[in-house]
Image (cartoon, rainbow, N blue to C red; front, side, top):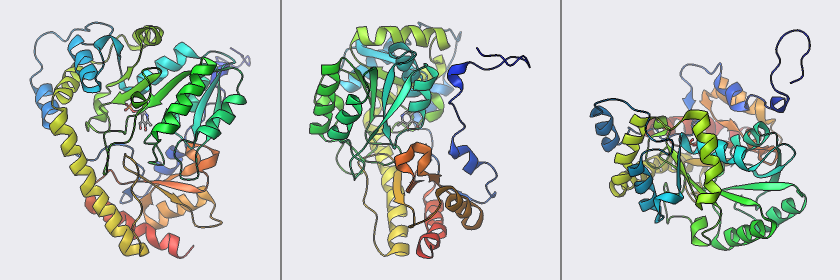
Length: 376
Ligand SMILES: Cc1ncc(COP(=O)(O)O)c(C=O)c1O
């Protein structure tokens, strides 16, 4: 702690934490702005979860620190892994926090994709570690060469994060790229964490995952995206028990266990995965058709679909100042999108547009934003 004599001061390791530009965009938006910045499904909570929540009865106990054994079993069964290789957490974000705290400390380095989910560098810094951004391929998929280059520049790397399909780009990772990155991490003794929370939300074929190439490393999943339940705050990590054990301790000291009612609802969702995921993909398809149809009408050509998730990664008009452009789009165009530099310096030339919301509003949003590209 470094005090100024003027009262308590926050811990030094938080000194690099900044509010995200997403907040600056969302705050002060016109009341009728179309929200295309959202990173969550806009459809209703699937019925099995709603029914499970409605039927909660009896004492609302803490339950085991590790979470409900039935839910561990169900998550394991979905992924074809034993329950002992499942860590249940308060969202995949809870698992991420616990893993980063457990495996990286002051002065250590954590490899993060750039552009990438904005929590990654923040979580590294909160552990006192240094985030080391690595570049992606020109199409924003995982590039093992760029990853290896960053790893070479990071002699104190302890942990590496990959995310595919990616937030904010929607781009995936090939089996070959995953195998090369996994081998590079193994050779260096770096823990590889593969964030696959968008993997079951796809328009075309399901994208490859880390488990297609190795039983090593840790894979993250969540009911927040494909199972349509971000508010339950239930996610998980899958990996060898000895990799998960220190993260279990961190998570238990942080929150004891995920909320029991949420776990019961998540259990109902996992057990109904076949129907719930098929429905989620139908919701996604309807939204994609609204988005790509309106886009084709406005721009004369349909956008290319990503590997999974509900984000379109759009280059800014040439020469546009990212923040000024997004604020003008918000205040004059009445559409909220996220400036790409929120996700890292290499995202500076793009914006993230979400099509997770209401299909009618998506069409309206595209009609409102298109003139800003045409006249830029
Ligand atoms: C790539 C990625 N990982 C993890 C999370 C955290 O999700 P949750 O904690 O809801 O599982 C998000 C949320 O937007 C995300 O985009």
